Image 1 (cartoon, one colour):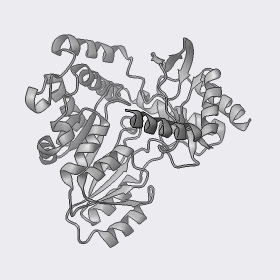
Image 2 (cartoon, helix red, strand yellow):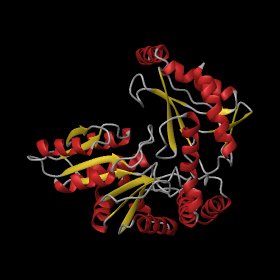
Image 3 (cartoon, one colour):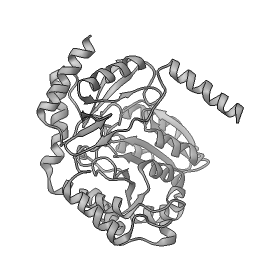
Image 4 (cartoon, one colour):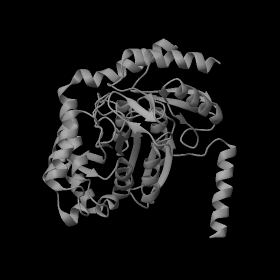
Length: 373
């Protein structure tokens, strides 16, 4: 083990030098965007609980009932143990929400993207990703064995040029993008991307992890995937598509077949959250309203989603600014390479329906004062 520990030590030292080492910090979460660290009360702007549903009484009650009725775990792969009723109900409601025939729930959004692309593409096929696509989309593409190309971020013209020059000679083709990009908070031009993909008989996968319930408007992709862990305040991932596609993935998506099913409490919580999401349009509108209040106050480009990046530059500067904000009562975590490109370390500010206007204003004023210094 000496050589293993030496290797790990050298890698950790290099990460420390570049201010890129990650550490886990014990953090308590409560309702109304509350957080605690080392016994200190903070307002969290680093949580993806965009609608504030993870502590909603109805959601918590649904999770408790599911545990009492179905137990703490699923017991094995769904193809072995079968579906408990809540999971079937969740898939039906997700499909209806997305206007699709069917849905398939995975253990997480990462697992969904690990399984979708390899089930639909392989050697001799083509996968084209937006260059800023999430890590799990890249991982799924690599597992597929297909040829991988990129197009410039949110540039449908570059996608068209890439497909025009490279589509021929490949069997199937997939286009992968996100509706809302997790680190920049900007939206993909979905209508243009879908039109280009159709012109070249390419199937579009859109990751809606950060758009569900917030900025879902516009055309649907043939393959709509996302998570249950952000706007829905629970845990898990899903794909909504045609019945034939869902049936195929049930038999071919390895990250579904060989993984234990979602715990009943997670499925029940997501199902109740989806009901609240559909019942309360004002709750869904609030994160974007607050994000735009923030960008207006700081003179930043108008927010397109619940996510707003505050660019800092170097990783250590981002860490320092995050620490100074924490000292003033705000939890805003620094995002550093390789999650974002070198030289673009940032604060990623995530807005929730649980935030108040005064909290948003106080954060904006603190950033304006501390960032300038």
